[in-house]
Length: 42
Image (cartoon, rainbow, N blue to C red):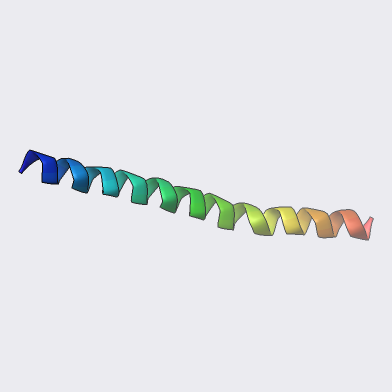
């Protein structure tokens, strides 16, 4: 029972970490592209 919970928790932690990374990446990509566009305009 404890092993199953440990594995479940491990997967949950990995999922949350991946979600946070993906969220930050999706938030950063538009910002960087926008910044590059601004650089091109000037």
